[in-house]
Image 1 (spheres, helix red, strand yellow):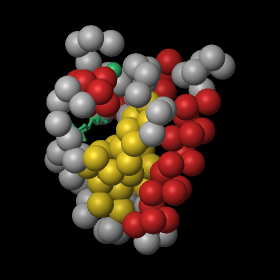
Image 2 (cartoon, helix red, strand yellow):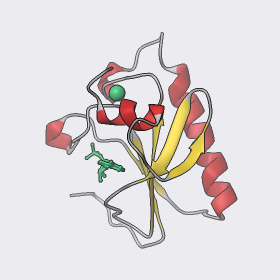
Image 3 (tube, protein in one colour):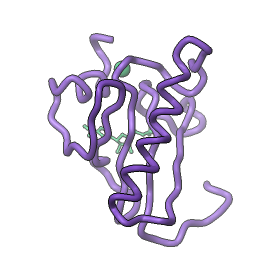
Length: 112
Ligand code: AMP
Ligand code: ZN
């Protein structure tokens, strides 16, 4: 998608601090970290949010979670939270599917 911030980050058009990359997903540090470890995992192909996951594009979601497991393991992180905000009321500010991975501090529940 031409005018999407995270599509531009995934393609390298906008710089980011890369954590992981392969053909399907890109992971990078959040610019405004909410925990000592806070990175985002995105599909390279544009999907607007969790609300746009379909049988045709859902394989990348399983892959993203496989990468979350792999990267956290490599970082030595055992306790972490994965969050995906879907829609403005839920706090989504960038309309390209992304999974926040947060770790390194105590977390509360329910989230605000
Ligand atoms: P959300 O508000 O759930 O849509 O999450 C979007 C996240 O993207 C926020 O945590 C922002 O801090 C983060 N973000 C926005 N712009 C950038 C950027 N250029 N590089 C890295 N993270 C960003
Ligand atoms: Zn996009």
